[in-house]
Image (cartoon, rainbow, N blue to C red; front, side, top):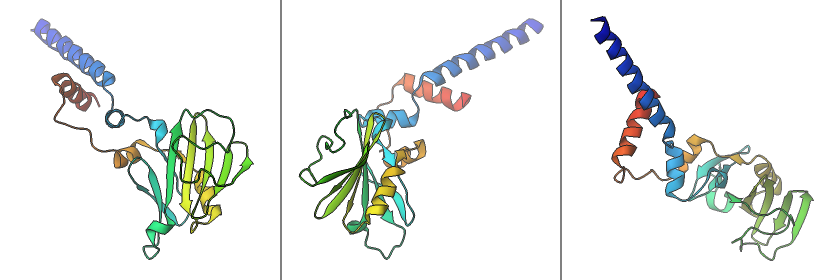
Length: 187
């Protein structure tokens, strides 16, 4: 009887150990969603300033007025992040940035540049290997745009889950299902 109890305890311990290993090798939901859209965490930055709150958009965050009476579109602020943009000229625009390509640029300090166009203005802020771009209409005060730029930070897991589309469930393999079960058991 003692042998059977000992064998049962060892079997349960081995099963728990296996589930722990499986759970540890499985990417979490955020990583799976990022992989599904071919993106990395570094591509998602969010910011917040007084009077505005973050709202998810398609692959970027917007800042919208807290006041529902304020017109959202003309006062929206967009937050972009570009990964692995080589450091250098602080006034060099990110690849694909055509909105203000020919607008005048002012370097306020190393790594922080302001670009003023006729209808739009923006800041570029270097954060390590990431170039953060915060763009707003001219209806957005420059000080608010600057504050939003300087407070930009990588999005949290919860923010990423809010923004990213859900991972497709119909293509999950048996191993993926087993790993998901392991994560639910082990925690």
